[in-house]
Length: 367
Image (cartoon, rainbow, N blue to C red; front, side):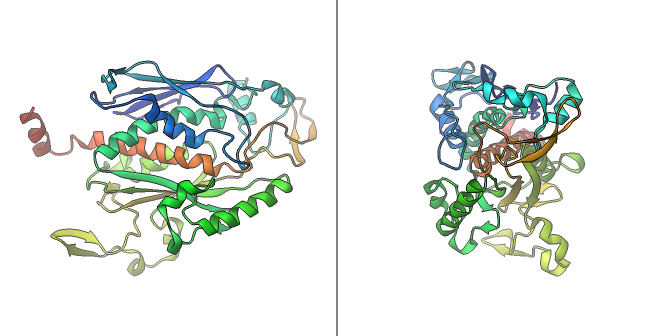
């Protein structure tokens, strides 16, 4: 099975299964000299771990990270950083029943058809626990970006039909509610809505928005390595993502050129945009304004309601899925989107270091 490696310069390899011994990641290409400890990683993992509220799976995992290599005396050495989170409370018996049939909305059928075999214990590599490695690596990427003055953060923009009011946006509120919404009133309404979903043995989808501030101009490569294209790949690689937008996204299809174009003006001696319909990227290259991206997450496919499927004997059957499942994926996915965006941005920043001869000369002549 290929496909577990991401990045060209800041490269990560994730490994492990939902009900295996553990989940981990190897980070290659991290510069030497970065102050880094397990607590830096744990802060990010705590944002995605299960059991934080009634709206997440009650699987009890501490998701405690261990750094196995690449750190000496509290700093990165420039060698590969290996990290692991051991699984503690697997209940694989909850999944014995599904070994013989294909769950609607899951990757059971496609994995079985592709490989002739599948790990039915929680989905194996297709499980949401696979994102632990992404988040652990993303914590390092975010720390590097912050030291470069780049601010990246994500939050829940909507759950079902309930969307945050932009006029009530409060960044501090994001960490004050379990749904990670920047609008307290929207969070309260969304909580009531999710209660209804749960009482109906149903689930909900939603949208995560991510904003990258203080991004330098000129990051991104023409043609096939556009910044927006690579951000789309990074975010769409998250298992439950079914849609990606940048800037005004699909609303541009309803706009006119006059309304959609971002006009320029001089501001303190710099060229700036009056609006940001493009979401901070033009021609696949960052333009210096905020990068704004969104990811649409499907409802959790594991629901206790009756669904129709087919078993391995090719018989039509009715099922009710058992086990511990999130009624909504979105709150725990916020940090995953943030991590994947950070990994993409950092990798392309490293790529951009070779774009101009004058910058290379400036750097290496000062060494």
